[in-house]
Image: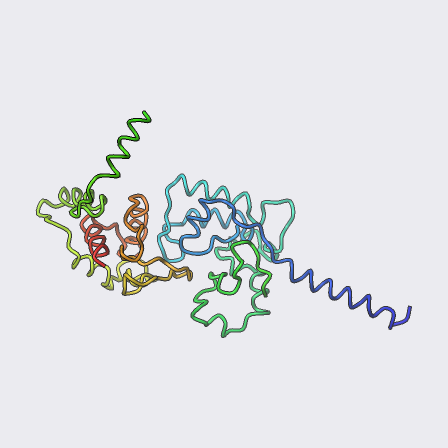
Length: 157
Length: 135
């Protein structure tokens, strides 16, 4: 096979890999009403798949001082919401997802934005001025740039 | 059971509006305020306004005052620190405000602790709602 005859195949493979790369930022949407209502009262209810179980345990155990605010819940609600997060955490399946890459067992990340995968994805694509835009306000505001983030769709980058 | 319930619903539907208790929650807070302090007379919108606008600096450093998230105008939408819009606090701008006692108590519990570093008294809660009902 000459180079010329290989070219279309090569281009097709590249196109396919780009399409793959663009369609892989999908996560299962949060589908529990209590989780949506309670977590979503102050910020988007983040998908539990982005942090390991131990992180959700610590976050739910420290709600009275939740990133500088009292976000306390009744014991029953807290237990229910923790359970939902444990069932769907990044380390709850048999596979090891990309949100676990570089996350050592000895570390309990408290923010999705501290996860190495999150940092790499955003460092490559988001310029500093975008973070400083008042419409963004904070890195916790996924919806500022990912309008379909609630549906688990972050494919708009 | 069912006819009783219906009768009750009908009575409720035709009960005259009593301006004195614009919110049943206020009656509860008034009772509590009286038992906290015998010289309590009534809630005032002025004290509620002060509570809302003051820079307390007594709770968590991120939230020195109510206005940190709710803005200085109860008629305007606020913004959480995480960037989510908060419906205005004024009763005239958010019709379902101060109607669900569990919801009201939940947010007083959280936000009084965040802003004041302590629970709010019944008088403070009543003053606050009284102010918001005038807005």
